[in-house]
Length: 112
Length: 117
Image (tube, rainbow over the protein chains, first blue to last red):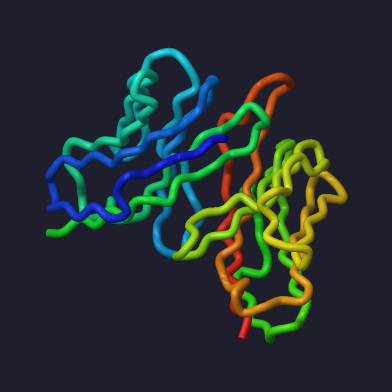
């Protein structure tokens, strides 16, 4: 069975500090991996995706993620966060049957 | 393209009533997903269509829920009869899956906030 685990439900951080949001997946086959962001009362918006190739993926708003196959992880990072990064972040995987499954989400709160 | 369009944005209904949520995917996309988002359960995949055919409906909570995709540009999610525990935000998403390839990105609508009282 496919599952996505986001290890932290809430991450508070001060403005301009670095942040890492953790994501682990369970799969014995190749998958595609994604990070989405959801602002209040909005739909989900793609931040970045890993399909193949370089394991370090850069996305919008200064975010990046690293695919680690041996650790089955796809952690999201940003070296310096802004107040405007406050949102809910979701890790997701696409399975061979083409459905897309999401983690429980991590609420990032950036404090001044 | 205007993106994935969902209607209505908000729906308040009484327990026992039928509720129909609507979705217009992005033109040219061949995969469509219905998700339900709640505080308790997060973002759950309810059903997934490919080329208008339901591929996986294992996430549909019970027989009160049904989904249809009569053509490539329209899908509905129906709850009959509705119950207070169905209150949630329902999202529709679409993507383009090339033959033999996996979906590379899902585009989400703004969601329908359903409240059953």
